[in-house]
Image 1 (cartoon, rainbow, N blue to C red):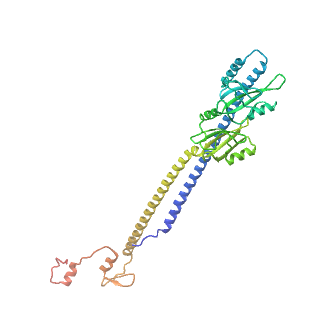
Image 2 (cartoon, one colour; image 1 turned 120 degrees about the horizontal axis):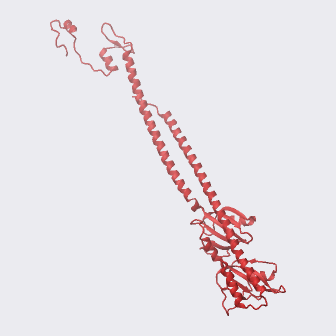
Image 3 (tube, helix red, strand yellow; image 1 turned 90 degrees about the vertical axis):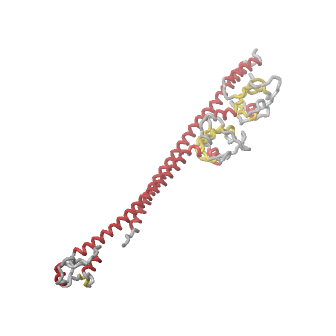
Length: 393
């Protein structure tokens, strides 16, 4: 029994399955890439919105502290030479402090750099800040206005603070000291913790020299304390560009986590606010989508391969059945056509010109089997004395 040749149909079927799977994979890849871009764009927009919010928050914190300082400055200069005593001034400063959140203290310092009045001071204890950069700068520059300095470690509180100074003057405009607000650096971290930046996100305030002011979560490694200037190359490139806002992707030198970062220069202040959203957080859903897509593509590929194998086997069976039918039809046509037969001995001539006994010819071309007997007419001729009955052998 001849077998069909399966190579052409197998090649066409394989090409069709390969083309279909490549098309599905291509469409899946395009869909995943578009989804990745959507997640990235959403992360950028979220980071930018949070950075803008923090810009306003930091600016508002310093603005309120500045208003409190101006109120104390006006009160001191207005009451210079009056009857009000230290207790009245301390009470006034305390009220301004209570109305201004985010402050460790509001204090006055005389011309020699000795803290005199304000919240958090202890009677009988003299504390000097005459060597501090913010005091010297305010003392030496009458036109400095509100002076914001780098974070310093408070001599009274022992906590990190940002001094915000105003110059005090005598009626003759001579230097009479300063009034300063100690802005709590730790308060920034506490407030940042209320924002949702994901499990591995981060928020930071840095000075214009990229010195760290505050960070959430707090750095845990050595060398990342307040004032340290450890920064990524992308952040340094932004600072050197002179731009006020920016967006970039960078790996943090603190924890080596890849983040999408939005950064802003705080309006009117010498600080940057930086919001970083970790890719492992905002792309977590996309990675699950990739895994699901890969599983679906795997199942689809398995189904198409199984379907193509079923189609191929069905085609093979059909070809075998077709060949069988062709052979049967050929046999029928052989017996149904013109059969040359001898008129005397009844032999049949085959297609090769040989004469065959009729039973041999039929046995070869059909499934018939023969038994032999003798008909009544032949029996009378061959056996003239027989009655002609029981002629079958």
